[in-house]
Length: 144
Ligand SMILES: [Zn+2]
Image (cartoon, rainbow, N blue to C red; front, side, top):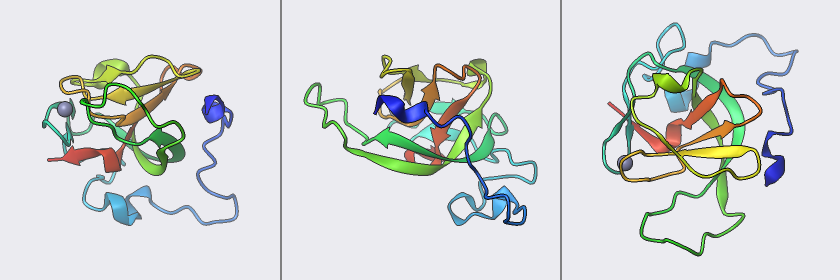
């Protein structure tokens, strides 16, 4: 688990494949503008708290392992190793671009992003080795 940021390169596309527009992926259809930015506001799925304003992030494809979403009620007994590999993310370059966001305590050199209001999450991923990259998983948030 602690080796989650071992791969420095996102390995987005094999060199042989033709450059495809990122907006063409099915999971992000209607969410990404021509410039690759988020068309809609990003909200917490649980409480609707606003995480990002439209245009605050760019679409990025990267394999990241996020622990399974947990409810605030389960205070302890986190199931280790229980998680999802997520591919589609909003990449935020500046922490101050967030409207609201919270962080878990460090897990190795990784922090996970959670809703600032209800602590639903993890909704995203941040590696302390790359202080200018915050990833918010499309599947873990709502869009409006
Ligand atoms: Zn919330």
